[in-house]
Length: 413
Image (cartoon, rainbow, N blue to C red; front, side, top):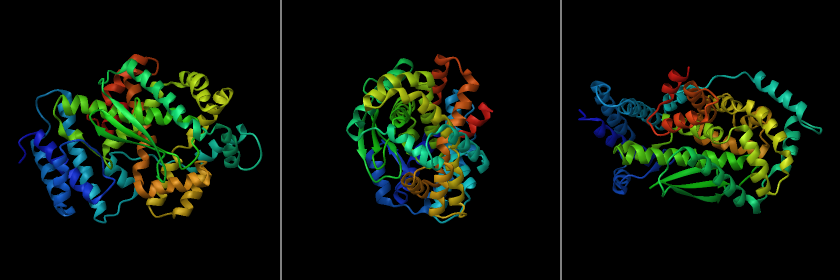
């Protein structure tokens, strides 16, 4: 029987590290004692033992129940630990060969299920987009041709990202107090299934990698700078370390299990954080005056381009639908790529890259769009849409606390 939540947290960290020995993608970040990770790697605890240990911790938590005293964060901590451990057991079961449908898997791992969207919804958006795009050929061909003028030249990539990062940093620092020594480094990499990644190092430091395999369009400068940096993943991890690990000694936040409910919160806040930092009109002004010039692109295209991107955004759930079909065995990799070309307007190389992502991360895809929608609903249910100061405050509270996706649904509904 556990003595308290602190003991449950320590055992949770040990279990996450133990799963990471079997699943190289599972431990997204760890900045606790290095010897604890070394012990996990040396022990190579079998999956069935990991599951039994996790079940023991869950039984103790359930028997004890939520703390009767303490602030709201303590009660949130109890529910967070419980749900993260349940997710861990589900991941272990998958590693042992258990088969789940896409929706079963997303609920087990991420505490949420994405809505099913009929292809007719995407067809309607594509038809409308086709009326906006010049030229001849399919909508995908015209969309690709249109965007060729909006690729960031390789020799201007770093300067453009630096400008976008500085803008996100400045907006975030206006509203959120961060430690003086927080920072991140940027690397440009290749041969990845993702477009950008934040590897949190601890000590208020992130390594952000940007994949340059495919052309990077101008909108991705602010998207990646805000999503991976300010006020996205970097700020999220810094605040958790500052407020929960250092100030409260909550060790469970020194490790980040990728395939867990935490990821829906992390990805959802990172995507919604782009809008928090830069609402449309402010973003357009920044694009015209800073970002397009940094890339050497024609700033007069900015407003039209973002109108078109707003239509393309209506296709975001197409990625969920193709991943659901692929994971459920209804289509193969080739059909998945063709589906992405047709309904998500991915170029063939980008569609193949996305299929690689689905093969590697499966139902994780819901965390981006469903996560963003749940976070927006939660924040706006507390603030409305007009109060910028209040919106930043609620957003900061969300990324500084042990929240679960199911909790966002209850409050935001």
